Amino acid sequence: DTRKGYILYMEDVSVSFDGFKAINNLNLYIREGELRCIIGPNGAGKTTMMDIITGKTQPDSGSVWFGQSMDLLKMKEPEIANAGIGRKFQKPTVFEALTVFENLWLALGGQRSIPRLFNRKLSAEQLARMDEVINLIGLSDLQSSLAGTLSHGQKQWLEIGMLLMQNPKMLLVDEPVAGMTHQEMDKTAELLKGLAGRHTVVVVEHDMEFIRSIAQTVTVLHQGSILKEGSMDQVQSDPKVREVYLGA
Ligand code: ADP
Image (cartoon, rainbow, N blue to C red):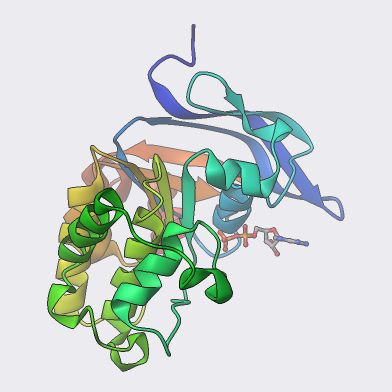
């Protein structure tokens, strides 16, 4: 059983847009609890890869499995989200006119619908989960603050917290530290490292210093397939990687 032990198993996946192969025989295997960084130059296929995993884009060929039994190519986007794959896009999309607490509350419902928010009562279990997540994202002192008053970094953490309210098995995080201060980057590194193990975390990022601070395994994507995979040192010293990615 070749898929055993992998939470995400992508094999021979290809997709073309108008004859251009954005993903080209991609094989990606991620173990449960891993913190994996995906890097690669613009146009390498990182976004398309995430779109395939989340069901936004259907590949032309290949297979994509989640856990042992879920064939993601047979599932629609909302089903995939419900199955435990959470995705965070680059820009934070929190509700600025709601408090930190309310944003997390809203996220509990799994759908971002404000009218339903105040019709629900929180169970003790849900309140405990809320508390846990607020602590995890470091916003306990700000839980009554409007999300609109948060710093850019705090908004990013809040959005990660919103994803965590669903207790996803796997989190896909797109450029989490873009626009952050160094201090915020350090906190984000701690947060993501703390999530790994309990969740599988896949991070697409450009900031090399940040990647080095969190990475276990780095996957370099180039022209829609994997150019190199290994530790940050292995990746950065690889001549192919230097040529296409680091421009050296
Ligand atoms: P990355 O996220 O690594 O920058 P993308 O996955 O966004 O790369 O893009 C890979 C390639 O596929 C790019 O050349 C891009 O222009 C192309 N591409 C992505 N999505 C589409 C689309 N919906 N239609 C046409 N071309 C696309």
